[in-house]
Amino acid sequence: MKPIIEITDLYFSYDNKNLAINNLNLIIYEKEWVAILGHNGSGKSTLAKLLIGLLEPLRGTIKVNDKILSQETVYDIRRETGIVFQNPDNQFVGSTVADDIAFGMENQQISREEMKKRIDKYIKKVRMEAYLQHEPHLLSGGQKQRVAIAGALAMDTKVLVFDEATSMLDPQGREDINTLIQELKNDGDKTIISITHDIKEAMLADRVVVMKEGTVVATGKPTEILKDETLMKDCGLDVPLTVKLSQELKKYNIINDIYVNQEDLVKSLWEYSLIK
Image (cartoon, rainbow, N blue to C red; front, side, top):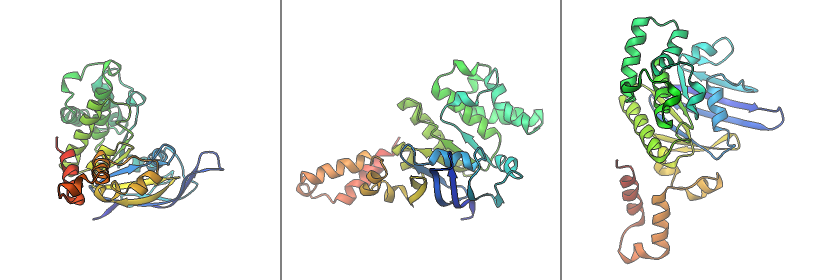
C-alpha cells in the first residue's frame, strides 16, 4: 500500500513548556480507515489540527500525498484533506444547507454546474436531500453532522478526518454516522481518519492507533489492540463489552463448565457486536 500521510518526529506545544505532541511518528496508507484512540489530553485532536495546518509544529514533518506541509503548501494540502469537527455548528456559514455545502467549493472557484452536481450527489449520499433549503441551525445534531460531512465530501479530498465527530451525538446519531463512515470506506476512494474515544467506532476501522501523552504507543488491527486490557487501561481507555463479558465468564468458570474456548467465544461475540 502507498503511504498518503507520513508524520516524522513531530513535536508541538501550546505554551512552549509542555509538549502536546511528543516525538510522534505515524504512517497512514491510501484508502484505509484508521481510528486514532486516546484519552482526553492524549493529543489526538491536536494531531488532527496539525494535519490540516491549523496549528504549526515546533519541529518535525507532515507529508500529505508526497507534499511536505508548510506555509507554502498548506492550501494545496487542504485541497487533499477535509475535516469534520466535533461541533458542526462551528462549520456552518451558509443560510441554507445548500449554501453551506457550496461554501467551500466557492472558495476553490469551482464552476456553478460542477457545484450543483456535487451538492446533489453528496446530499443524497448523507440522506439529507429533503433538507437542502432548510436553515442549518434548525436541524438536529445528527442531521447537522451529516450536512458537515456532505460539505467535506463535496471538496473531493483524498483524505477525510473525523475529529470526535460523533461525541456530541445520541446513540442513534452515533450509529448513523458510523454507518455512513463505513459506506464511505466501502466506496473505496477515500482515506478515513477517525479521531475518537468511541470503542464501537474503533472496532469498525481497518487499523487502530493508540495515543498517550502526545505520542503513538500502539498500532494494529482492532482485534489485536482493543483486546489488550493492560494497554487500554494504561491509556485510560475502556475495553469492548465483548472482552469484559468473556473475562467475567472465565472468572466464574462458566467457559470451562460449558467447554467453550475463550478465544473462540471472544471472536464470536466480537463478530456479533458488528452485525447491524
